[in-house]
Image (cartoon, rainbow, N blue to C red; front, side):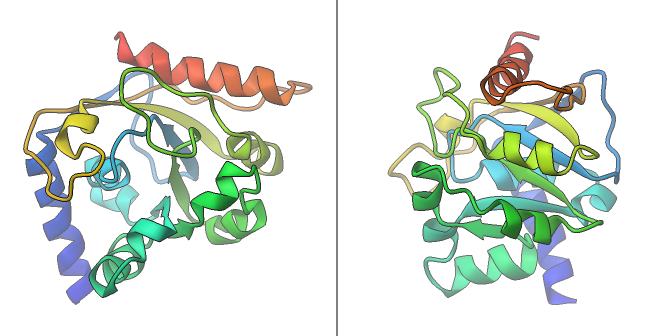
Amino acid sequence: MIPHFLRILLAQIAQLLSGASVRWVDCQPDTCQRIYFANHTSHLDAVVIWSSLPIAVRAVTRPVAAKDYWAAGPIRRYLSEKVFNALLIDRQDIKVHQTPIQEILNAVGDRYSLILFPEGGRSSGEEVGEFKSGLYHLARRRPDLELIPVYLDNMNRILPRGEFLPVPLLTRITFGPPMWLEQGEHKQAFLERARAAVVRLRDL
């Protein structure tokens, strides 16, 4: 009961802090298995996307989050494991292109969707960085999953780098149309197309 209550409470707090307006462009919320992939500028990005989903979708969606941040201390660890049901990943693995694909696939199973950030780390918010290869390998191993691009606007100002307390501001979350890895598509071409799908949402 406590984790369920905290999920509702923290989703409301995240919505209040971010002032998020949510748009679905050629896409609708659904409990089908998906990978939501977004630009990344704040430690709160995963929480804000998660909280913007309808309750039924939220219940089957797991954020992929940085282990060094979300496992730092008992409170963050409890929230990440018991409330957000997050999949904690070592960022050092991502930096050396060793994303634990099998671990992620095991966590997805035949039920869960994911929220992940293909840049592999937070950017300044001015530009969307190049995507690491993890999204490609997940799409290749699980071609049945819908890939949903997401653009987060203004999150870098709500919890800037080096800050611990969020500043309430308005942000916008835009979910775009689903995409898939095309037959015979090479890794770099796919990653550039996926990044372009996120950037395109910025200007809508």
